[in-house]
Amino acid sequence: MKKKAVVTGGAGFIGSHLVDTLLKKNIMVEVIDNLSTGRIENLSHVKKEIRFHNLDLSLKNNLLSEIVNDADYIFHLASLADIVPSIKHPEVYFKANVEGTLNLLNSINIDRIKKFVYAASSSCYGLAKVIPTPETADIIPEYPYALTKFLGEELVMHWSKVYKLRAISTRFFNVYGTRSRTSGTYGAVFGVFLAQKLSNKPLTIVGNGSQKRDFTYVTDVCEGLYLAATSKFVSDIFNIGSGNPQSVNYLAKLIGGDTINIPKRPGEPDITHADIEKAKSLLGFNSKVSFEEGVKKVLANIDYWKNAPVWTPDSISKETKEWFEYLS
Image (cartoon, rainbow, N blue to C red):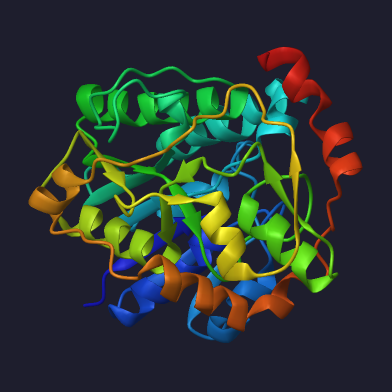
């Protein structure tokens, strides 16, 4: 009999790729997404193979228990993800990322489920003091998004300890790839650069561009999630990254085009670098898509970003005003 997985946030960037990964593994998939940031178009190619439920996890709903009750695996990716809006509206992020997680935990059949996998964020490490950063590093969230994602992780680990939920948390580093979000607020550098390139605008490089990020291609992240779900490990936390940071300047070079520098922002690390030795040795995880290959895949699908907002130095300055105000 086929195994069943429920993917929350399954119409989103990472979630939709995870749906693809699970279907390839011959697993039945049901998706929960309220489409606040996800796009139903991300699932159009598999719509006949999955069941989709438009549900908001932050609101209590009896249907949720029915959907997850017979699941073998639950992958909880649904969340709000941007930094600046989390500073402006922390209560919205708390409701989505903390209360949403709590409602999901209260709806599952703990005796039935084989594994609950939580998608956490490496932003919990803040300005990490240890590079590469292991799972044992200090937790120093710099803004409400990072805090709420960590609080969600704490809930999951607490349920694992107290109620014996078979759970694992995976801390993502800088995930990129096709289908990454194109709308809404100023955010991840890939989307910003791609929309600027399509509009023949200069790529806005924060600071001098020497800062490095542990860019990890989305399909590698999905493989890590699958390995976590099917592993024997419970009540454990794993970094999922490439372990091979690249500079923003190098990314700009690969994308191509003119560049312009804008002020460096407070609360942003000079480098994110995942220590993935634990995931390698215990889960058999490895990052397979090279940075150059990943950027090439994204550029081959650049039209996906044709309706994305095009950011300029002035609009970025206005959008990030609170960032400087509260994090300086």
